[in-house]
Image (tube, rainbow, N blue to C red; front, side, top):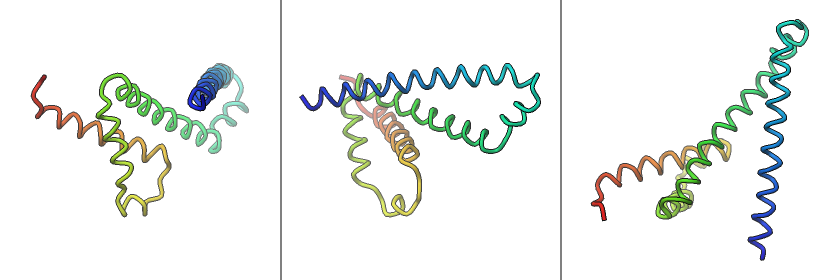
Length: 128
């Protein structure tokens, strides 16, 4: 029953995040439409903290998009690919532990590397 509760909580969070992203998009769209005729708003939107926040959001969404694509591939096509991801995460190198990167950066690099390795190996396999 614990897994069902966790999945329900996850589903609720995904719905909430989706609604939040839509609200952010609407607000940014309104700001973009008003900015050309409002010099103060244009200046505020061009300020460094505002542009940094947009860049961080953009990068996070790109990383999530990559991860979700990878996740759907694993869940729908090949469980062997998921096993490879778990194995690569378990065998981190010393060099990886020295580099200070975010979880999403690490996840993106590992999923892309595994996908490339998987595709390269699949070319050598004989079809069933």
